[in-house]
Image 1 (cartoon, helix red, strand yellow):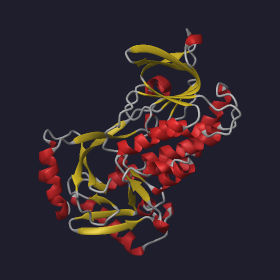
Image 2: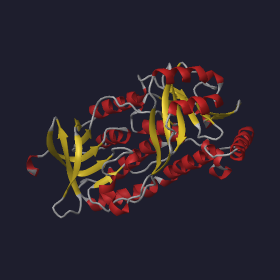
Image 3: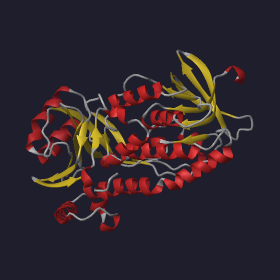
Length: 401
């Protein structure tokens, strides 16, 4: 049976941010014989999500290193030049340092551009199939492939290295990590809607609105006419989310947003996504398989750092896997995974910690916490200090992610 199954060097489960960029990156490695890569995705239709829509400058830079900056073109993406934090009519402007720019966009359009780039890549097969389980070797020490359903038929795909990139709701995280895995924690949800022709306090800037007694609200333009609104709602969720937003949140937002929000909530459904934290733990105990992206490491999306981490991870993995002639040599692959785990920490740990710290600051309950957060933001904005982690939380917020 194995002899009749498709054989690949790398099999990637999930054609999202991490999966598509990794497939493209590995296809560009300078090798006499290009790697044969399979990219399996349950549905190749354009996805519809409320997160993964703001790419920080550090993510844009990583995308450029991967030769994928073209994916930001032709999708009506919006330049992002910093943030504006507002609270009760007051605002603080937080521009990116040194004129750097991020991009914001409809998530689905960006994913389709990444998939198109992966499809054009050398020796990459994109397959619409639902992976049902991982295949163990005869000794049950490692993973050698997957079973997946395509067009109603169960098929087998084999590979020297299996990469799991199936996102925050990963079906295979526990199988790969076993008892070594960490458990994700969820303290709140983002409730999302798209506002039409909304006017933000500062154009081409993300807006973080502080709401007394409730979590923060994040707004950013994702196309010429569309602005994403994400309302942080702590668990347990209210039974009527629309009423909660209209009664408790909208009155605390800039008046220019009141009508677009009311119109949108009247005509369309609202969506929600859990805001989860999952710390990265060392991998390599399970032979032949590795996790990447949100399947392995998550942080609160308030700072929009997830895609930046994912693209920088792919940059590192491309470099570390490049000299390995045979990806079936687990000793060498495991060494590369170990190096990646520690090499990524300066960036990923900063973003992970920042996301939690800023959420705890902006989403803290009580008047004194809100005043403390506002005073710190205002003081730092006035001083305009050079970005450095040693200058505290606000300076980290202004780092070139």
